[in-house]
Image (cartoon, rainbow, N blue to C red; front, side, top):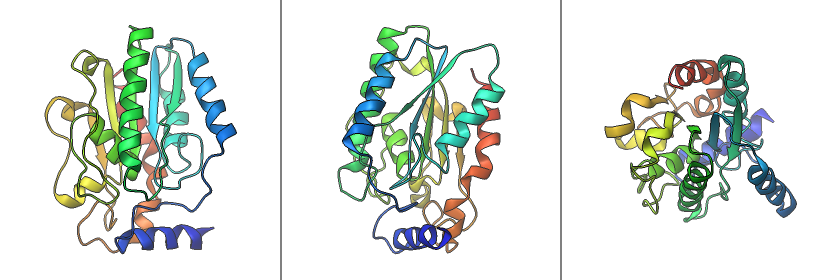
Length: 225
């Protein structure tokens, strides 16, 4: 398994695309189930919206989304929590990040309309960080498996976003970061040597170790809700 992970990261470092772990795409049945679960979710106090990395298994993402959500459940007390997995290919296609961008914005807008008191924690890992960047108005065009912005969260929704948690963010390799409205609510992890987020980085394994930052990210977010 470790060999497969490293090979995926190596293909990324070579510029072929942003890969985290090799896994099959979700089946239509799984996607339908996820949508049904999301539609049936009650208006919780906080919803964690997670965009997984390229080919990353796990509902919210095995490396980042799932461990971050578990940690948030422990740290955010006295409030109800739910989660939503951004519905997008998370593959190497040119439109993948754009599809995730549109789904994230559409979902959060819909939730904000249905649940006016709900707040959101946005989580993005690797290609998923591109998805979140675009959704908050920071273009990932030109980054590894990035895309131009196709949708942004409207001004009316912006105050409902409590925290933005980013891991292995490809725009960092371009010398960019989250600035402006969301900056104080954002924590952006880039492991030393990670070639996805650090220009000239050579440690492909560094891109696969962000589970170690889940607790720190959850502590940050818990202080914002």
